[in-house]
Image (cartoon, rainbow, N blue to C red; front, side, top):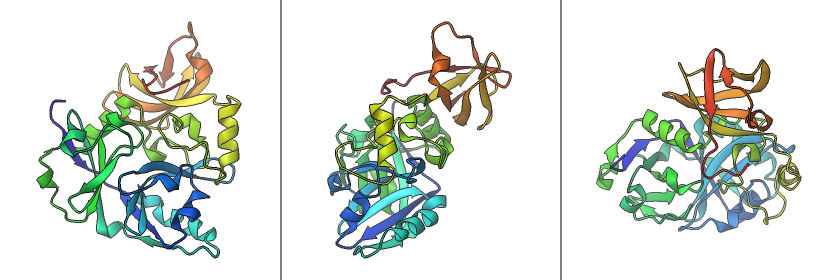
Length: 293
């Protein structure tokens, strides 16, 4: 890809958290360090069950006296409802402001430079009335933009791309896409690479689900991982079981073209193991360059 591309991200919502206790309130609930969020810094984070299982992931940016949590629109109402349970006497206000914003991604050669961003994950700056950030998960993903609805993104001078192009880019890099790849109330963060993708802060103290997340890391309990696969034939549908000699080896998740994300048991990747199959199709898993397992 020779020119940077811009794609509008459909199905995204924005929850605004305001009030003098907004940072302390979120700090005790989400996986990353909210105190790091500033006009020039964004973070990637997750909200977990008390048992440490994935519920929702999101990007947190600063918007004056508000924190903006950009997440899957379909999950926003339930997320807001759960947060209100923990509000108690905290001086915070929660508001769905999705109608006021649009989400975009810029990717490909020169995308960060075109937006005046550094290659440091989470770097942020003002952009056409909103904010542009170097993807906090991985700089190779490019940038994300959260701008006022109706903002003239043509001013950025980037070529238009389709959602499928960005999806293929994401899958090639092995980056999970929310609930499409991480099963709600079942996936453990480290199975989805949250450690390497800057989604967990190990020094911030307690938060919802912190105990299991820490135990998984320090006891080496990760037994399966999300990773990209290629198919030697028609791409199997999401949810297709992956097997090795008839044994359960994992499951196909989101896909595009001839590649997909899949959750695969690590013991099925040992040298000398036979071919993995999803239905009648042979699939080949690949460990992303950024991953450690």
